[in-house]
Amino acid sequence: MSTNARIGIELKDGSILSAYHHWDGYPQWLGKTLKEHYTTREAVAELIDGGDMSCCWTKDRWTGKQVAPYVNENKEVAEYGPQYYSQRGERDIEPILNSNLIEYLEEDSVGWIEYVYVFNQFNEWICYDLAGDTATLTEIPA
Image (cartoon, rainbow, N blue to C red; front, side, top):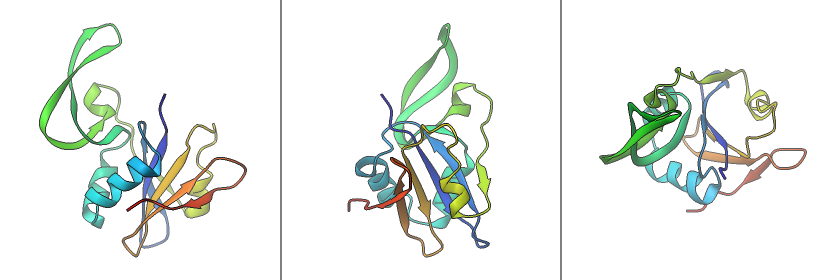
């Protein structure tokens, strides 16, 4: 089972550009990973620019080679980094631009995103838990 999340960056005008993240979206893993490895606006922007992903920090990469129906080859590489759906041969799933934080928090119209992250204009990671009726600010472990 996956813990689905969105990773966003707040732009100068207050809009938020974000991408979907499939695995381990809870703050104890994804939040901590973002705080440890994506610490600059440039790094966060590059991560999101790749579009929707399975995981933001892994050695696994899809090679594009299909080994069985609906199964693509997955290989380990030397360096950690994101595993984008586009690497699997799926259509590029572009980042989504929301006009503000409220719109970003309401983006999940189907109700399967559990956490959303924002790299704000102060270069800090913020996490919201979407369980329940309202988004709740949630601490990201150090």
